[in-house]
Image (cartoon, rainbow, N blue to C red):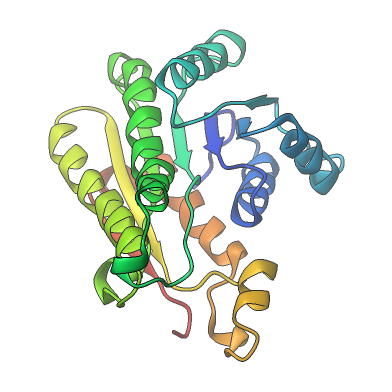
Length: 236
C-alpha cells in the first residue's frame, strides 16, 4: 500500500480533511505538493504539520485553468512527473430553498467541486498518461445519493464529481491511470460541529478514516479499482 516516493498533488491541503491527508501522505514518504488557495493557508498548514512538512507548498486557484496548468507544471519541474492527484478541494452550502438560491452561490458550488476536479485532472493526466501510471482520487458526498431538499447546488455539484469520476474511468481504460472517488457522509470537523451542535458527532466519519481510504486508493495495488465510488459513511 506504500506511496513512498510517489509525486503526489493534494489540493485543498490546508482544510480540515486536507491537513490530515497531507500529514498522512508525508508520513508514508510520498513526495507531496500541498496546494492551498492563499499564502495565509500555506502558513496555517506549515504550523499545523510541525516538522512533517511536504516537499512543496504552493498557492493556486484551482478554478482557474492558467493557474492550474502552471501549478502542475511547477510540480513536474521541481518534484517529477505527478503520479497521484488527490482532489480534496470542495465545499458545501447551508440549506436554502431553490427559489432563494442566487446564481453566484450556484456557480460557486459547481466551480469549487466540479470545475476544480476537471481542471486538475486534465492537467495531471497530461503527465500521467504518457508515463503510463497515475492515481486520481476525488471527493464526492453522500448527499449525491440522498438528494436532500433545499440543497440543490451542493447535491448537483457532488453528483457531478461522481459522474465525472465514472466517465473518466471509462476514458482511462487501457492506460496505467486509475480514477476513483470516496463518498463521505458528514465529516467530523470543528466547522460541522459548530453548525450541527445537537447531532451525534460520534457517528460522523473521521478525517483520519478518509485519509486511510485515500491512501489505499492512491497506492499501486489499487490500479484495478477504476471508477469506484467508495462509501465512507461512518455510522450515518
